[in-house]
Length: 84
Image (cartoon, rainbow, N blue to C red):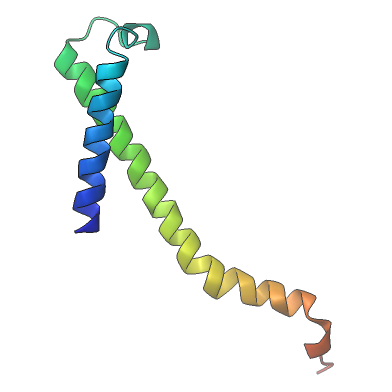
């Protein structure tokens, strides 16, 4: 359900950005397109950015706590260093 809410928020923000910068979209390099095509490009770009952000945030949240932090603690914690 959170993914649906995030997608809805991304679509909403994409539409508000299109409404704010409707005159400046042609200056961004989208020449010769209709308004619907520009709207779909902006919404698709916003959804792609949001999906990549969520993906990397989940990777960061999953692997930083479990993988990176114990290895860094093992490297820096000199009291637990033993000679095997």
